[in-house]
Image (cartoon, rainbow, N blue to C red; front, side, top):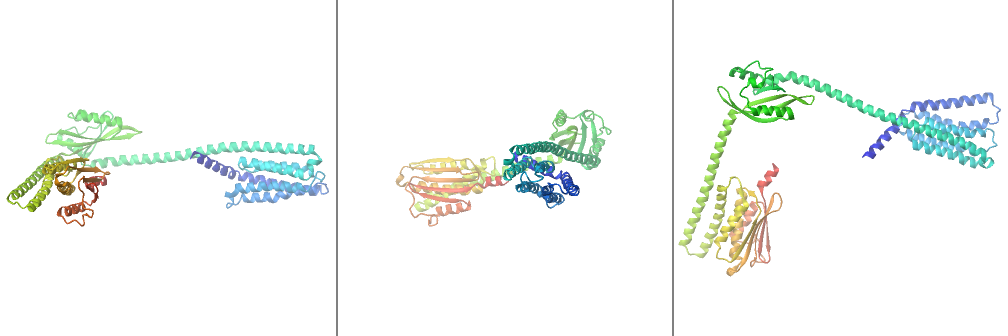
Length: 557
């Protein structure tokens, strides 16, 4: 990021450096053109027969290039291409240097001015064109190389090596001085550019701060004008104190209460402890905290007046000036009526909770009566099929009664601890089949569910566990039944009931099974919007995946 920023700044500088010098470039180029034209006219007029006259005219080949360079300084459309155009123009100067000298030789009249003209071209490059320093050094070097190549081409080097090196020395001197001058000039402009950029940025910040300050001052004046009207329109009791706990302002509601209670009416400038002798130490400490921290404090303030008891809710709000708390506004709202309503609500809630507990207790007792009636019926009827049916019904009713017992004993009447419920249910079923040589292994993750979830899960567990005890181990064989409740993720749980018994028939499915118990299991899983998987091999495993809707609702909230 930093490298990109530096590149952007350097690119911006290059544009600034070139475009800010356009007027100087234009003047310099026009002056050069005029100077050459005037010199050519005077030379033709007064020295028309001079032997080097024709060779001198060849130097005029750069005049069209100079004219083009001047014209593009006026073109807005070409302004964004100035840098590349001037690079191309100066590269063309390399060709012009070669063209002027390639067909000449040291014996050509006027040739002795050729190296001087090359020096003027080189110094013109560094003087007129505000290109990037690296670019201008490379272009200047190419122009010098063009001269060297031309001198070798036309025989100057072979004819007079001393003269060649002498002329080359002056050209290189001009090139070095021009490069140094360009470097110094570009460095000065770079510093000026950074300085102007910093000044511009600071100026913008200053303008923005000034505008913000004016806006803030205007808003402050407007707020002060509206403050009294707003506070007087509020029915709550409001007062403002300074750092010495002296009253700065009271709203109309509090003034009216002062008049009714016989307190001081003109209390502006007086300490709060003199106006309110009954004020608590806690209130004064809260005011000190707001002055020190600048934070809003919400609390309570209860006290007795002549004709009533006040249950007040207080808000202490700091007022800042220059980032310092200079005043604190206290807003006291009388919650006495709300307190009475809340106390009444609490009593109603307690009464409703007692009634709900009583309802659950009675439902559990009624279900226990139903179980007792079914037990009596079993004693009077020895039909084994009827006994089996009644026993199954009794177990289902017992699983439902157990839910109401948990709700009756629970602190929260809207939720059931599922692990505790399933553990109790498993223990009851184990006791029912105590004559079997079966070990029950249970493992339950803790979670709370609603009665809408617990009831189907209890019935499912009852059916599957009862079936496992009845049919998984014929002839009272030894065996193990495992019951587990595992948390899959934040919302989803898995209930697994498995045994190592004889297993189910290979073609067994819930859809084909005609028994009432399996039909109930299928319906209850659908009611839970869950999924059931049956694994048959070395026993049977029922895997039920369901969602705890109570947790899902909390996450959504």
